[in-house]
Length: 311
Image (cartoon, one colour):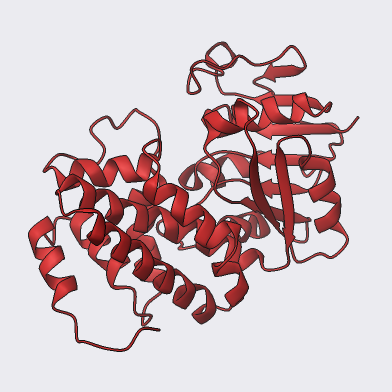
């Protein structure tokens, strides 16, 4: 039995804790308020094998999963002791610094082993034990298969990926593109338009990953195309729902104290980090969220782009 710490008791953290306990591991779930752990994941109870605590881990762990939003990762990770390899489970880019999750961890804990988990996973389905797959992005050829073995099993099939940069960029960009897909649905533009947007979103995601030093195969994998398809078509996606509200003329995030919508904070940071890379869909989403474009204006701008061959 392995000892695994999960940091963050939101929906994803609780789902991972449930999966790992089901796989037979000893799981400690860190929550700021242990009494409210699991409230973000209604209909699913934490099993007895999950110990919920407000104390951060201080004993050796086989893995420490950080399932906190990207914008809060720094403040939480700064308090962590390096008691086991870190696995970043957040998807986004930090506003201000424009850093990805593993870059934040490397800054705070230089030289400490770390990986990133990414893929098409809704928390409530993983908690229910439904079949799913994800990728463990890690450059260390010894740590990568070890984490795949420790964290996978049962209904969650894991694959290794030696391109952690691409896994992180795919996870960040797909949230922004999912907001655009929601806008299309909310504005009543039809399924033809949504299919076209998702397809061009794949090209945009691939262009981003390769231009910033990632691998082309990652864009076509679980943390790229796979996660993009789920987030752009699944009604349970918070990012899709935010776009749906925008398309209907409503605020993207009506409740600032509700669940975090990663793509809202990531969109401007992504555009800033990807300066000079052609990302028309992501740029339109950032402009929409900042009030620089209206929905009709964004649609018109995308449709008026110069005609070209597909890439």
